[in-house]
Figure (cartoon, rainbow, N blue to C red):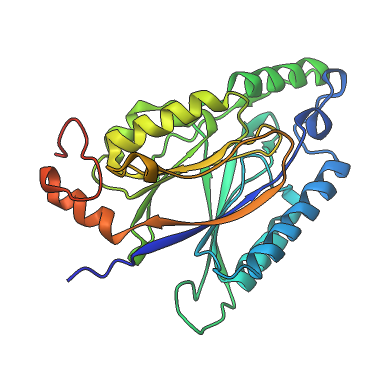
Amino acid sequence: MSTYKEYLKIGFIQTNLDSDLAWGPDYDISLQMKEESENHVWQEIKKGFHKLFNHHSKPDIIVMPELTIPNVYQKELRRLAQEMNAVVFAGLDWQVIDTVVMNYSLLVVPNKWNEEGLKSSLTTVRYLGKKFPANAESLTIKKCAENHKKDYKFISDENIYLIDANPFGKIGFAICADFYDLERYVAYKGKVQHMIILAYNTDTNSFYALAEAISRIVMCSVIICNTGKYGDSLVFSPYKLPHKRMIFRNQGADLFATQVVNLPVKSLCDDQNAGQNAKMFKVPPTPFE
């Protein structure tokens, strides 16, 4: 008998952060978010947690965009996750050690997560890294190196992460440009029910098209949390019925937004195991190994 839950509740906090104000302009590029932007985005994050805490359906997992959490607020984010008793995936401001630049996201797990009626007292944190810097990201690092006469270099995280969310299924993960990494989907095919992508992405239409393709190929729900500067956070699931596939899409620029959506778990797992006999979801064009 399956122990999977029927649904996974995903909470979105789509922060609205202007990169030119946060790390620019060109003549004054920084790899550390400027204080005014740190304060602005942190106020949005606190507002987002407050709205989700008071939502009629509290989320199991909360997602936030790439490059969102100021480094000085990491401890505070852990406290909010603990109080909400929700797992958090959130993009972290660049990590710079001497001339090494890394792009990480935080995975925060409260110690009593998914234990009904119990409050968490501790959190565990894992840093999930980015493999491929986006073009704009590489240019920013290069420009900063020129301005400061330092040999900054982006260091890739070569790991492919598979996160076991127990009764909510298994989760694949990528940061922005890593969404184009085809090797990732070979590893994930038939092994995950959800794919989470945290992004600071201007080309939202390309991500929308890719979300549908990956959802079909891997046979999983695709969750994209993009910056509110460009919008288009979405959830796509490979239902057979076309009108059910786009579970959520938040189009529009310069938008702060929160939302809670339900993602299928048990029914998707059952259909993954059923193969060509799947009832609710479209099977991949090539079978699982």
